Amino acid sequence: MRQNQPILVFPAGMAAASRFTEAAMARGEHVVGASSLAFDPARPRYAEWARLPYYDAPDFPSRLAELVRGMGIVRIHTPHPVVHAHLREILPSLLPGCVLDGEAPYATDLAAYRHALRAAAALAHAGEGLGGAAPLAPALGTEAAAALLRQAHAVPGMCDDEKLWALAAITRHAPPGDLVEIGSWWGKSAVALAWLGARHGIGSLLCIDPWSAEGTRQSRDDLDAVSMAADHEEAARIFRISLLSLGVPGVNYLRMPSVQGAAHYRADPVVRSEAFGETRHAGAISVLHIDGNHEYGFVSTDVAEWLPLLRDGGWLVLDDYLWPFGDGPRRVGDALLRERTADVLCAFTAGSALFLRLRQSQ
Image 1 (cartoon, rainbow, N blue to C red):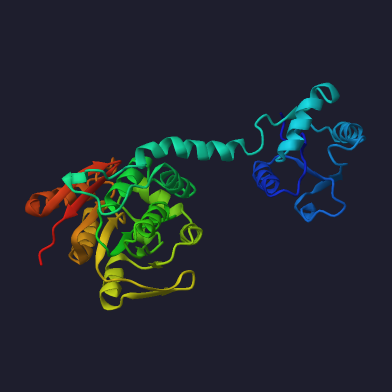
Image 2: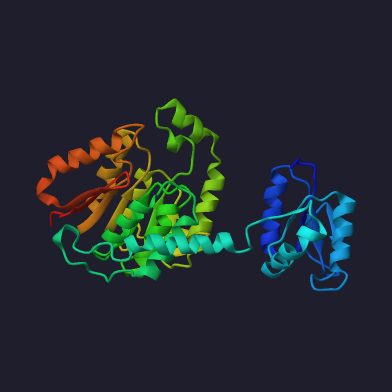
């Protein structure tokens, strides 16, 4: 199909129709909107517009055929399941040269839930017998695990399902305290931490990220080129939208480098932002997720600044411990495993991250 051959979207006023149209127009496709309403608020979104009778009106087939032939329409997209079923029945004989989008409305949305339910089987009881210790919190169960996956999958990012399994496992064994994340970007893992922290009653989430090109430099030309080209303001906005969509209390962030964030956290347990209001943190960390700049010096500094604030029996997560672009997180993690062997209550890798439960000196 050539891009200049029109696509008819009907009924064009549905939210799903608007999303489809925006994506089609971004690809340079020619879209014609149509509605059965005398006044449709969606009309201004379309350069070309048509009025059609309701799908079950006697003159609907003839009016549709007139529109399709008159405008040279070769494809029809409808987000309405009943209209889709009706068009699927009448189009082959009425307009054999016009194609109906094959996937039924809501099929993609339902497929995402079905996938989450299938994948949830691995998360439903994550944390049983972890490190030989009894969990402090009950298992998620299948539907709650699927809910966690749906929330996390809605956010772009590199946190895979194996890491989500590990986060679900360790938070069942986490003592009360704050969940702190260094490096959040779009907020995929932050969403998981906030959800799990609220689910298990662990504590508040604080995210530290400068959302700046300078803060993401890795001294590798290929990585830095991607970082410099990224829209850091957009990433910060997507982060806020992702966390706000959860509706979980006790979430906030500091837009600053890790060292400054640690100083703020030590000096004042209260964090204020326009997006999330005021959050009072405990000042002691239950789960510390370090996923900032992966250069060795930065990872070492993050651990030095934040690890002393970890509660006894709390968890340190070093992301990208297994990383094809460098060895900063691995060197720091290996040093901890060597130097604090007696304090390691549990250690394992999942995805690319190292998970350590540590005994803290009193």
